[in-house]
Image (tube, rainbow, N blue to C red; front, side, top):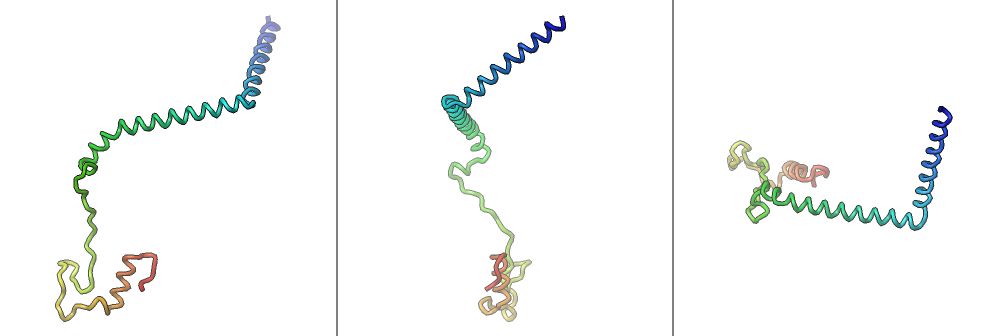
Length: 125
């Protein structure tokens, strides 16, 4: 009984190896390579169509989430914190007394600070 079992196992392994070898040999031929490339192209086309369909299905939900921004409603503007100007009080944004206000065109420290604020990687000029 044991010999028959090993014979069947060996025969099955031989058949499996032979089938596997034929598949590998066929895959390495010109026709086999052409078939594999054709299958990859078909797979890419199917993926592209699936992505396009998913995008088309999701677009109404995105439009509803965004609201009127896509239908021509005015966009909300981003607001930045107020920037202190030379000669102005930062708390009230009103000019300080006229005698103590500096002229920004002659104040080199104000120009350097302004340039540093707008161009952080460059020196003020």
